[in-house]
Image: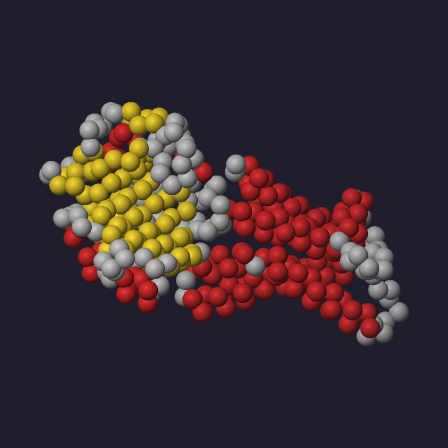
Length: 339
């Protein structure tokens, strides 16, 4: 399942490295007075508008190197501007980085258009007897970067960007959904209903939401809700080796006051809070990529909205009764490796 998005990522990396290689070959050719291999010129000739009548010249000189360098510098500068603008607006480094990476293809298109405009102006105002060339060598750098950004755009659209996990505190014991193992809860004095540390847990892989086994957890004889314990990397494993991929607690639980989501006290939350505020703000979260679903009585925050083949998707789910009283709180992690 992860093969397709990873192949786009691998292709983007290869194209980027190819672009750097072509640029270095141009620099070496100019420095040594040699010519480039014909395949580089052919790559440069490949990126041409459908109705373009431009005939690229198979020439490499200092001007070709300058144009290639200018294109790369403009591309880097455009990325800095986009990153800076988003960071100035959000004050969130990861979000600024994500938005910048997400805009790579748009950035390279804008820089490409700008480069053509500069070239056109140069040609129109050219007064020297020295011939003007449309360099296939320079355009090879442009083509490499163009297709690398296109492949990267596809890769990012399929894989998304990693999100911070959801943390649940059970009586001061921190549980990172999708990461914490059952052994850590066992060491903190928690027990799992009718299970021991060595009990076998089987992941049937027949559900997109509940992986492995849903078990009630206790400490000192008191119920702290339910968790899904999931084998990682195999279909079955001992309970102690399983990962906590889901947690839920009913609002009428006597231990609700001992449970927090991202250090947010659940007992103080009302349906009015969820109707009037962003869910991410309620739980003091600042995800890079998120979506909120709000119905009359169901409220869901989803973080990392792309397919979860590479990065985990996280959800906080809060249910209310028809009369507005709280019914259930839940937090889950989703990943293709568990399905």
